[in-house]
Image 1: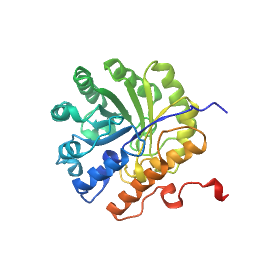
Image 2: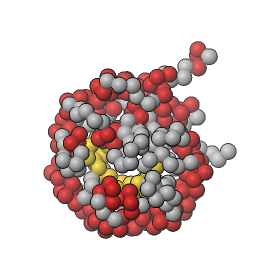
Image 3: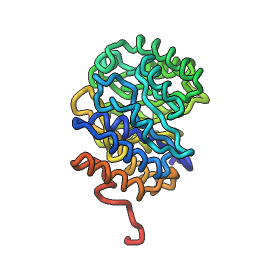
Image 4: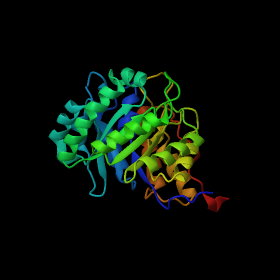
Length: 306
């Protein structure tokens, strides 16, 4: 078996990717409390909101209030998702409240048009300008390529096309590229191939895996990415999240499931699993419904009990 990394980095995306998919408005004060809790679990990277148009995603219309309200420890990197130049312009008014931005596009034209009403090439040209502005402001940039492992509308997405997009984003100044399994279409063999090829094509670039558990293969795909040398992952507490298009695209892998599995395999995360589970219980109470997280239901493994 391929040697696994000794430690990995986790970016918690629940407060953005998770909350934006909830049908009921989450009060701003609850968001702030939940984010403050996550920041004290040992998680060092947290995506807290997005500067999207309020009429498009009303759930995140309080981005300014959330950023102003959270209590940020010195050792936590805060990131926000930026859809376009206008979103970055809004975000920069609060530049002292975050460290990183995420930008995104889809590898498939059809998904990209349904998501942002642009072709992939149009989005790519716009993001190259956004990345340049962000770099000038001293921000770390993560560029997320959605549908990297397949598109629900077009089917297979050629890996050469995914890597071409990734190379352009890296050349534009993005030091981190995330490959997103947006609707849970990836399988472990495919994941191993993507990250093996990406390491060759993108030397010096941080490669991040963003898996959804739509078809129950999320953690299997994590293992495949680890075996291919990936050391950076994104996940969502409680298994919150999904994709606005299409229907049936359920949540991200649960952060507590990811942390539990990694710790059992001897891979360090720096995260206190018990504290993280408290956060997952808290968000479950706020939402008032069962969540998909397995560790939240079963609890962590206690080897002392056998």
